[in-house]
Amino acid sequence: MTRINLLPWRETHRVEKNNEFYVVLGLCMALAAGVGFAGFKFAEDKVNFQTKRNERLNTEIALLQEELKEIKELEETKNNLLARMEIIQQLQGQRPQIVHTFHEVASRLPDGIFLTAMKQVGDKQLVLEGSAESNARVSALMRRMDRSEYFTSPRLDVIKSDEKDERISNFKLSVLQDKPAIEQESDNGI
Image (cartoon, rainbow, N blue to C red; front, side, top):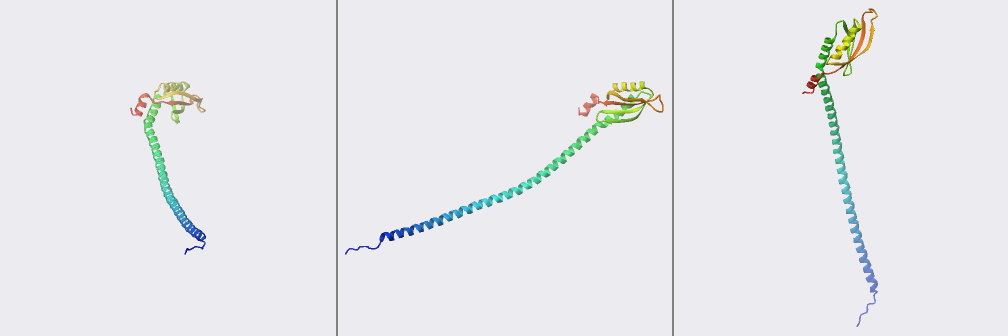
């Protein structure tokens, strides 16, 4: 006898296929969720790792900035010391000039002239104040200063007769100080 299957096999086959589809869909969703979760964790780990690196770099940068501040302070101290050393060397180089200045002023003063004040203005100008027995002696002093190797350009600023004694003239004279060529070479170490 022939068996006839009267059951709705197509419908059972469709139900089986649907069940199979849902199982495969569930597995794919689980796999996608697992991959997504793994990707999220991977990205989160990368972000955490980069955050830690950034924090470490920031602490290292802060340490380096403190060291740079110390280096700048040391450079400022060094520059200050070098400036002081340069000033001291300039003063050491100018020590003999004071002696030469006083010697030249004393040797260039003619008889009858008395200095009451002598002051240096700036680096090169010397102002002499004093009294003279006559105006001719002041002129002689100016000529002698002009012939000196240490002084140039004498200029008479003020000359007037004294209030107590009209034979005496008070004067104010300014000259420029100049170093002779031999002394300039010795200052440069030559």
